[in-house]
Image (cartoon, rainbow, N blue to C red):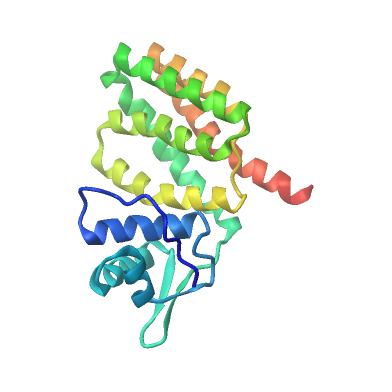
Length: 220
């Protein structure tokens, strides 16, 4: 099991939080491949922690669906089901649309400027075909809106689903396109205007369009 020796260590977190974050990232980006067997001793040595936070992290990752634990046998990284995009994005689209509606009363000029600046960085990344950076910036854009919705249940559910979006991206189920740049602009405009119906509609389209693009790729 090849494990990177050079990686950016997280700070100001517990050993379990650090281990969980790093293992999740390695599974998402494919460093730990689908179907790969995980050895808690090797992982503990690589991350410089004891086996306990590794085991606790693997248990959390199993709850998230990133690993499957077979007691007394092995722990394996789960396979990537590209078709799961059809189940993953619709609830996210609904939650993101609702977040946009709820965020309207809390937005101010500073937040609108932050959204515009974030979308500008997103546009530069897409146009430069730096799609990994675009993915991260796109997540920043939507997180600003989710944060302003100020609903802890939405925040929690979105946080649990977003890692699966990242994993599908790394396995080429989700692509970043210039169409999203314009949709972000429309989202900002309708947020500024306080138009709940239109901002919710554009937000849903922004998320659901990826399903159509995925299905189009399959038929090409």
